[in-house]
Image (cartoon, rainbow, N blue to C red; front, side, top):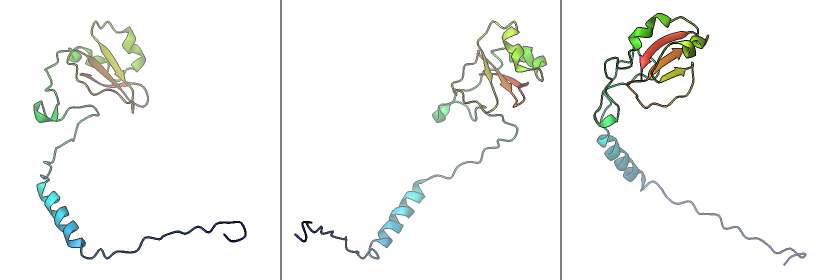
Length: 128
């Protein structure tokens, strides 16, 4: 003890030679990279947020039914303010999706989605 203070000893780790392990890491990397299949490019031009890509299968996505929610009956409201949606005579489940809003991704073919622009007007009406 020096002047009432006990000395503290720090043991620094020693540097090991890693040059022998580099080929092993490279071989492991190449093995893993060879197991990954290349992605098939998907054309997403013309799609809106929330559109489903593909249909059924291993991706867990549900194939869309042809207009079960009868969204085509409400297309005349595109361009109108989103505030009119609660006043529309709709007897189905309705979801208003504001621009940039986070929403659930489950697909309900009988639900009508009203998509709003940043300015608040309806830009798209779809099932889901």
